[in-house]
Image (tube, rainbow, N blue to C red; front, side, top):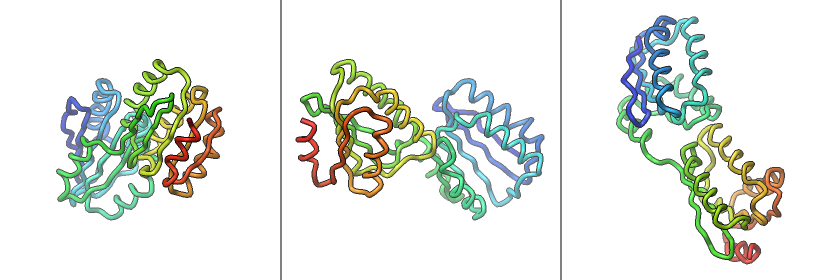
Length: 240
């Protein structure tokens, strides 16, 4: 059986799974609820609770689940999975990065934590005008798609005021992306503004961040250079 709590104004949809799910559970309950929520919200945040009485899916239900997921693939901004079942947690950990949005697992006694996680800010993207047409963009924590929604507006506003500029990309406190959706938003943001920066300095302290400099050459037409985290002054001097 599937129990659905009506979607909140913030786009949070809670579902509880019990027993063995059948295709009828999807057709009669979950699919209509998902379609209705998607019709009124561009992005959904989903809480899935599976208690000890949840025993899995029938074959037809598994296929219905796959079809429903594909139809709403790009609409899941964040998913919290609440369960004590090890096999479900392991599956989420293996497949989580392939999801378009952020995915986290919680124990059954952490239901309130799961609800809080769905509403709180995750990573963030900060922009600061350093003067001399230098813009610092600092990536903090692990970013989800929500972080890029406001960032694009802020970047467009800066471009309108300054035209072309020099970019200091600060990755010293960056931990990566929550899901493929956030990574896709990052690539889109870079691609849409690829001809605008005249110089890009990348500031970081991880080996993969040096690789980012080489990769960015394929997306940005500006000259780029990597600086270690202790060389912030050198990065600014090079840009200036």
